[in-house]
Length: 557
Image 1 (cartoon, helix red, strand yellow):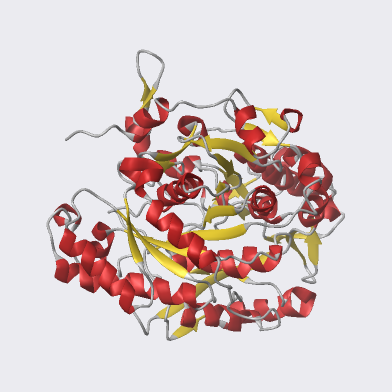
Image 2 (tube, one colour):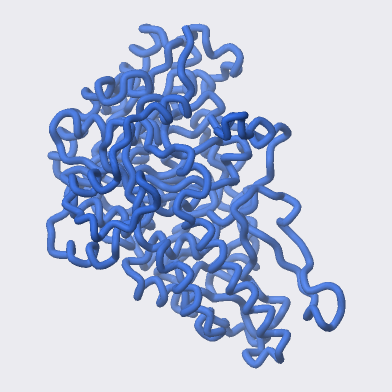
């Protein structure tokens, strides 16, 4: 049997003009800023006018730890949104934009797959509406102004050894992780060590995704700490007078992007911080706008629930005052067998014993989500190689964890294949949610990190030397102690070792570095060997991406 590729399915979609999609949500055409015929931004004026409307129900889609076997979290998010519309509910999807780094590396895009995709898929996975370029430009404008300020006399007294602001680009390039800039003599400035992060790890990205409006955006940008003086006092972005110009560059990027699914249902695609090195959620402004326009909003958080869902609950929901009504944990039979020790090349063969071993990973995620007081259901994203015995084993295991597991065929059948999950989500969403973040604001920063490590990762302890602990105490003394923490950790494991699958316990979580994201409003703990600038794999996807003789893209998916 042959299947159409994702890109073939997306190209065959019967897209409606974006004004028709907006009209379904009550957005006048005058409040849509079109980018071609099939995508548009929603004006800030229209969004402000929604403030007094009641909110719909917020549904989070998360997943087990990602494996090379595939889980399909975004595909399920899109499918569920379509499924809710199919059963007569007014639903909107909210997902993140795709980064060029993974697209040309190894992860792939972020538009879903099969019959559950957001279109235009090619645009979404490439330049889209230019938001990432605007974020990159705003970030690097501040970088340029820092070195320029030092060149022209350094009136603020910045200690070149204590500049914490790096540069960014939206591409995987390990060669740029650590470097020396300003070489070449007096005319080029004062040499210093710095480096690049990927754009999705930028604090500017996080700020855009957490800001309520343009005024809040500029305030947060001004609060960025770029470095310290010799007396260890901070220097802020506003001290360099860069915040206004950065906000100008981000003015259009702050407006949410409206697109559609293959089934012509509305989707907001806006913002894109990674969940392993940032907070992993789409923008607050897109989510809030969707909640005012729909009865149900289906959103996702990056990677497994130990990263994306934890940060969605502890950072995004805490900061934005959101209260999720239900959560979906996505798993596949293939991925669970891989967690149970089956090699990738053997995943097509039935192995119920390995599957049952791998279900421990699913069980941990179910328990973690329940720990936030949110009702949960498991979505089994179906593959043709799944057997009835394997599917039944997942159902039985989930039932033993107090959650129903529902087989979903949305990849092949679109909304028709996910109706059962949609109905279950509606049922759960009608149950009162007892949502609460994992830790209180007043808990000390290091204790917050320990709480996440012990309760979510099931670690025994957190290892951090005295320099890191002293830095955290200094930030607490400076008034940043109430901020949540953002754990930067491998997405492949509950540990900091990407090779350890399943549900390990009793391990240690070493913290290598901490960073203050004062403007965004959280403290980042970089754990283990995770990097904020990824590298390309041995055979990057870029090697097979090209234009064919008709000028169409090949190899993207």
